[in-house]
Image 1 (spheres, rainbow, N blue to C red):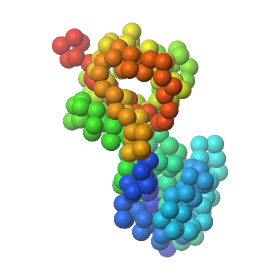
Image 2: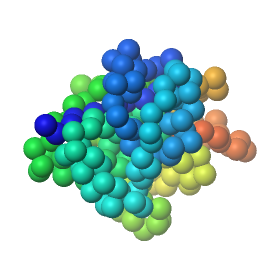
Image 3: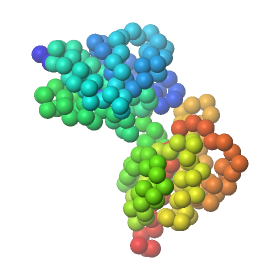
Amino acid sequence: MTGTLYLVSTPIGNLEDITLRALRILKEVDRIACEDTRITHRLLEHYHIAKPLISYFEHNKSSRSKQVIETLQGGENVALVSNAGTPLVSDPGYELVRQAIANNINVVAIPGASAVLGALAVAGLPTDRFVFEGFLPLKTSKRKKRLAALRDEKRTIVLYESPYRIHKTLEQLKPVIGNRTIALTRELTKFYEEIIRGTVDEIIEALQGKKVKGEITLVISGCDVESV
């Protein structure tokens, strides 16, 4: 009998945002594959869980995927977690899941916290249809090209952004997609949680002269259908 690969969602900030099922699975599996063992160790220590950890991140995912598959084929159950939120969403794991499926290994999702859905829910923008774009490219030319591709997108757009690039991103938004209504959510579920809503110009003004900290999710209104 092969083991089961569990995709376990973890808190995006507040440690209370984890399901009872997720805690049970983390206690029951044989091993936990995680992005950063230090971050996962803090979570496990908080809930008095002790399990062997396997480092699984972007730069070792190919070799570690093989190791995890062999572990699963040996009959052990493995939980995959990211540093925060739902695994595979702008985090490594896709390759592992594909290999598990190819090897007829059972894959089970343990739903939970998600910065994408949390930001979308509080943005005050349409939620019936949306598109998640993850992080924009680092290079300016590629970034502008990606934004240009979203110019005529009618669905609400959700992006992740680094605090080190948020000022630059906002400055690039207006000339490409216009002065749309957006919501900038920062440090969701944490002590310094902040949600700023307004036009691109208003958000730029609100952040002027400020050193932004923490993880950011941007929610951008879709284009005006009448203007397309």
